Amino acid sequence: MSWGTLRNTNQERELFQRRSFVAIIVVILMTGVLIGRFYYLQIIEHETYTTISDRNRVQVQPVPPTRGLIYDRNGVLLAENRPVFSLTVIPEQVSDINALIGEIRDIVDVPPGDVENFRERLDERRRPFEPVPLRYHLTEAEMARLAVNRHSLPGVEMEARLVRYYPYGRLTSHVLGYVGRINEQDTRRIDKVAYAGTHYIGKTGLERVYEKELHGEVGYQNVETNARGRVMRVLEREDPSPGQDLTLNLDIRLQQVAHEALGDRRGAIVAINPETGGLLAQVSTPGFDTNKFVTGIDHESYAELRDSLDKPLFNRATRGQYPPGSTIKPMLALAGLASDTVTQSEIVHDPGYYELPNSSQVFRNWKREGHGDTTLYDAIVLSSDTYFYKMAYEMGGSMMADHLAHFGFGSVTSLDVRDELPGILPSPEWKRRVHNESWYPGDSVNMGIGQGYFLSTPLQLAATTSVLANRGERRAPRHLRYIEGDIPAQHLLPDVVRPPVEMGQESDWEYVINAMEEVVHGSEGTARRISPGLDYRMAGKTGTSQVFSLEGEEYDEDEIAKRMRDHALFVAFAPADDPEIVVSVLVENGGSGSSTAAPVARQVTDAWINGFPDVLTDQAVPGAMENDGTAGGEQP
Image (tube, rainbow, N blue to C red; front, side):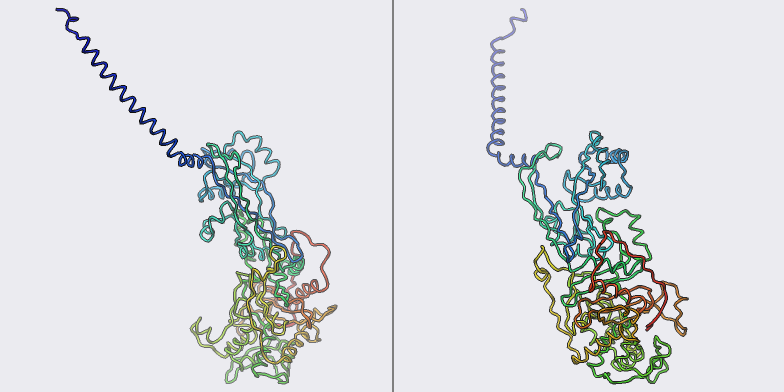
């Protein structure tokens, strides 16, 4: 029997048909599942996946606002925004960052500091495809070379950004401060939504004080991007609200005059309008170029500023705390009259020293031979230490502190100078609390001439002298004058109610102020050297702030290292009968206030009252006026 007779073709056909049927059913079922899935995705979940697709295609980008401008009282621009071309890199589009940086440095110069800053920014949090700056301030030639090589530099862009610029960088370095790149520390104190897309924030000075007003409100735009994240077009945009412009009380012309008057000496000058409290000038020398900090200062330049013995980064006007010396004598004289410790007619013999009762301790006058018989008026004019030693001993530390506190000593005086220090107004209670020590009669004696534990800032000295100029009225110093061109500062910066200083009789105030006039215009006044040619009446007081003392030895300035010499001080207001300006001057290690600080103050008041030079130069450099180191006049 053959093999063919054994095959059952009908059975095989039926088996094939059954298998084909099952396969068709499976295919139909799979097709149904696929169609069902398509239906689910395309119909039921259409909106969901459309949104997801749009998110891949459309991105919401923040649009940073333009920072507000800052003007001086006459409309001179002090802080502006200038377009700067920058070289940026989109890290997501670069496979080898190190190789790319090497290629870029073959085309344009990129300092090592910029590369280091770039790497630090790479580690910071940022949005995907957000450009990271590598190099700022590209020149036209550099942009041309980069454009020619653009095809071989993936992820490299050239962007035009508005960057803060200070036309008078050194003149206003301590007043305006500067902006800088937002760092990790800044992110902890800011609203991340409000600062989305913003790269800079106020770091110091008024840039930080008024950061909220200057910054503005962020805007947004919907942009369409390709698969690599490159923006193809803008679909929708909500414009940002620019920051508000600020107008200050500061006069840049007076600021320059004060800067040049100090020259290359270390010191500070504060000028106030006593009627309003507006700060007309606030100078601390040496200063520094704030523009170097905006886009990131290199480590070498910063180290040079940080380690300099002259401390250019230190704001002496608001944070420098010095013994006020004899500049407090007019205020202390009022306190003595008000407390009946002394009278206008009382005479004290000044032999050149004061000996504590029942003690062998002797306190010497700055003038070795003394001033003989002196009244309180004479003691202010001649700056008799002996008179004030005796008065301070009789008043005691607590009474002196209570009266001087009314003028503003020992407290922050300003409204919008956030870095101002309060100084130290010592008292028995203060010494017990801080040093856990008793108050001695010698502490009162030292306090009577503004030495010992007593510390004050140049800003505080100007503010307290302003109380004298106003015959007791207190006006808190402030920088801001207007916001948005014509809105008074009070809308943003409400004045703090500070009661007037009601001390003694009106005649006592005139008595003290007349003595201060005699300091400048009298034949024996300690500041008489500045009176020749003075065509208005000035009331002033010289002072010397002791840096260190020589126990049992006579002071010889020529033998003392320059940085160990006394600080020179002078406070004044003019015209004396209707003051327009109050000035405080500090010259570190300047020696005598009469020969060093008083002439500086006159230059400032002359400019304000008699007029300024016609030309104000940009980037003014302090003048070459030198301190010859000679001592003269008062040395309390």
